[in-house]
Length: 160
Image (tube, rainbow, N blue to C red; front, side, top):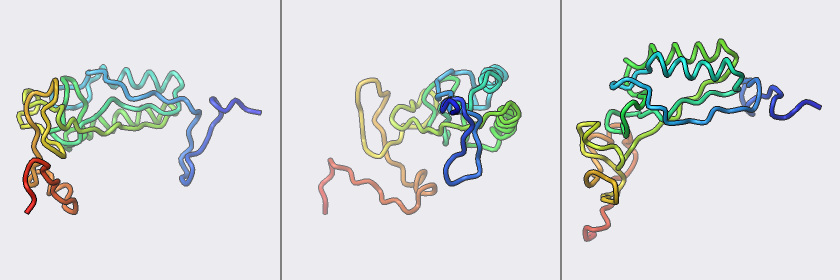
């Protein structure tokens, strides 16, 4: 019987085959450029994991909107300018026999104005330890992305 960790397997319900069950977990490596594009160092680091035999290589957390960046060097996946380096990475990982995944992310209340230039957004007002400023829900910004979601009720406001 084959070792279940090293045996090739298929993702149920798909035709996707993975060479083994080893997965590089998403890590915060802070190697991307200021605009969220992948650096040569980050691509090289992730490629070495594919070359080394991981079945699945997962990127670091990658913000999905400019307002969602939470730390310096965070990868982004919100603009067309990210696509060329993402294609380079995914092609390289695939050519080394691994499956590539991107961990999508939005920092919410932990996406400080000092990095994004915007007030943090969240599903509710929140000012907890370590947060730069109170969060807000911005229907104009998020309504375009999430048109079917109701505006969250502010628990501090009377209902009427």
